[in-house]
Image (tube, rainbow, N blue to C red; front, side, top):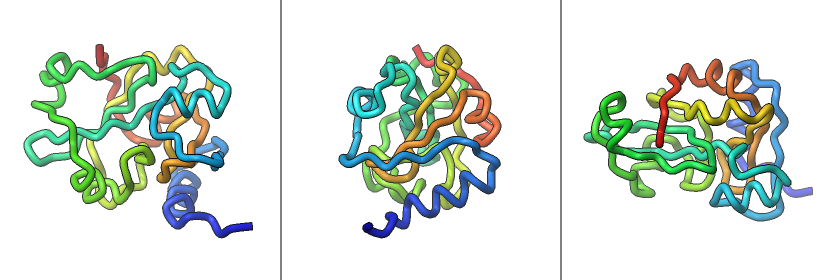
Length: 155
């Protein structure tokens, strides 16, 4: 049995520290998109919590959105400030993780976080667990509690 990737181990410890009750699932392949994750897990794409990191004038902003949605950056800018998609170096620097595996927490420094309330439509949601092949189950309420996030309409 291969050793667990260090990013997943770090996430597992942080999940426990925050009182998370969900299961971490390591899939055989990376799931860089909500559609791939939903297919691998056998759930609706809307139950996937995409972790999208944006750059707001040099400050990271994380939006956890339903895989069924795209973030309308103009719509959310009144709450978050101006947003542009973060590049891979910005993502790695501020989260310690790679695009496709950015978890809702367990970053080197706290990141302002927002959650798409559409996720409430699903009794179980799945989010990245620090690695592109790892996800964990949670609920919208638990996600909000563990991240200290604010709900925001993204479309």
